[in-house]
Image (cartoon, rainbow, N blue to C red; front, side):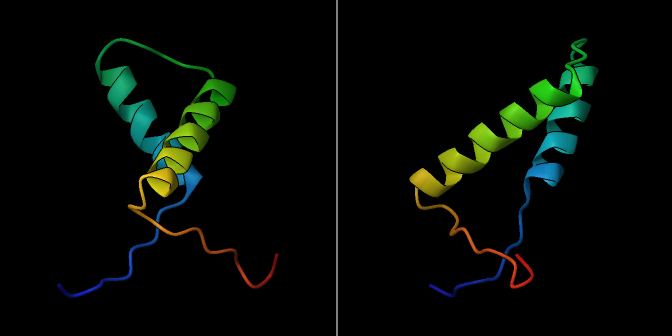
Length: 58
């Protein structure tokens, strides 16, 4: 199976959840969105769906 590079960050996840939750009638706070995004990111790492790579600038 061919490996591909995929970049996902918590801000992108937060924006996705905001759109989807708003579409369903929920308006979470910014803090709630970033908590959901962090949890989702951690879940994807735990399930080995993504690997965490830190920016070289950090």
